[in-house]
Image 1: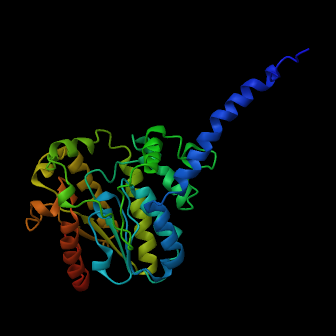
Image 2: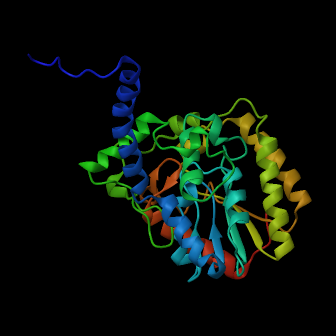
Image 3: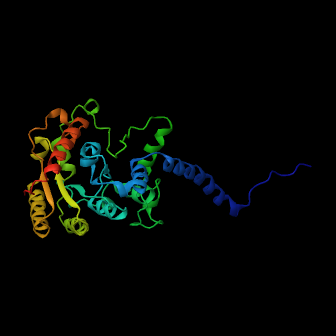
Length: 309
């Protein structure tokens, strides 16, 4: 007499099915977290060497790609990252012990005061601070504590199983992908790029200025030179910047500088010495342009010219 085949009791079937789904997802999550990435590298570097850093580059892709720390000085480092907002600049400046820091560089772009990562289409980039940079601004139970919560970027990272990752960064934290030989055919995309960075609601600017204020107070109390930098832009981008947004930024910055007269500001957006090959696209410098900007900034830092606005 044959025994009937064993069947799992009904109450266990759904949990087992869920478990079978979760196991590959958990394995994929662990794999993605194990991959090298700029956030992990920067945290490891600063955890070991922040007390030696003398010049700190903060900010978004405009400085992540646009400044070469090794040109600025032997003890310079870039903590900038793509789409990094003033909120995270402020956090990073306060998070690590910068005992020898004498200069902090923060980029100011047309979008800087208004951009809030968590409310943008790139909200998932906030997970890099929670996962890889010891940042407690979000709960461990939040969506920012997982790679897989943003499924499309998560799947893109899984492609490293069969494709070589494109991300590259230097020992000093600069992004190295933006080379002229790699730029797209329609690279001078000023109108399109400016449109992506356009804001009609200026309400978030108050929080952006508050982070600038917090950083300025931190630097002033410690004798650190805070330098705000607007990096070079192509004419196609400058002509497409929204006039109302630009006017609001200017008004808020003037008020900020009145409250913090020791903060330096360099507006090099229209610097005519930057040619086509110095750009990767309409608002980002190429690696060649980054070296050029860094040499120019180094000369400024050595002479410490008065702030002009």
